[in-house]
Image (cartoon, rainbow, N blue to C red; front, side, top):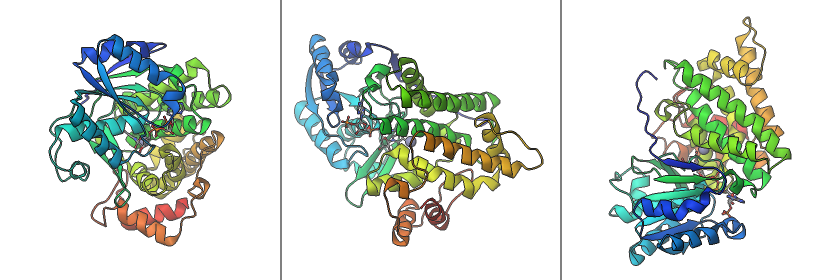
Length: 394
Ligand code: NZQ
Ligand code: ZN
């Protein structure tokens, strides 16, 4: 990482009662008519949606509502949103929810501002050149979409799940009140914690030739330890404000490049997982937990010292300079042990998926873009490697 750019333009408004500022913030960023975009029932049930609408009205703004975003958000909902925005003259999009709602909002923002079929942009055929402005009221700490430039959508035609990162994919602002995450089911809290950790781990495992910056490693390692400590607190006490706040801010820092420039990161586990959640609609973080250990055991020999560093600095494995490989493997097992502690799966069967050899071939075929790409930087993986990891994670 001797050359990099750091660009994190989103304004963060963090803390208790910050959702009260939503109307004034939308107005400040030029909104007149807002699309309020949300998911299933959680924002309605908690009263957040009603408060948001009230605050928009109070600020003199008009709005239209579009709910129904599902986890692993669908292209069809995005296209519905684009049509609605065009018909209604919407000039600002407000996402009220988690990564799925924010990513769907980003898709709508692109769809309104760019010509042609939206999927052409997600499949890499065309380049995004503009977007409607958007903001977020975050209700789950996980994906980091509130401050990343990425949006991940699933096209029901072929169940293809694809990410798109563009310079136009940043929220203008993100409201982050940790109290809004109190109502999360424990499974979603834990899945979010895994996703947060893996965003940092993907960045930690760079190509073996990459010159690391010590300060970035230290931030990454402390963030991982902090998430582990606070995830365990939340398991027993989900309404612990301090722990919710730690996790929420870690979620943002983990994916805004503070813990490493994403361009140097490995990202294999994310690519492998996206095929799982694209096909079986599982929670993204849980899918990451199911494949991470198998990926790690498949690749660690490329740079054993990186895995021993993780084991010693993050997972409290005693160093043994005579057997670095054993330390690396103990570290991998320790991280899987932590996933188990927070009731996350460490294999695909624990996601209630009975993976057949046919599934494995299909997943690897799709993940390799029909054999046309490799994934990963720590170790480059081709279609055969991908199939081997899915098989090991079975
Ligand atoms: O739909 P509702 O009823 O709101 O329920 C949601 C959903 O079922 C629920 N939830 C959210 N906040 C809640 C709550 N339930 C109770 N109380 C609350 N306060 O939680 C469930 C999961 O929500 P979702 O938005 O899907 O979670 P997450 O933030 O983990 O987002 C996952 C999506 O983000 C993508 C994933 O692939 C997945 O599609 N990612 C996006 C990234 C990005 N844009 O930078 C990066 C990530 O690596 C990831 O790929
Ligand atoms: Zn992720």
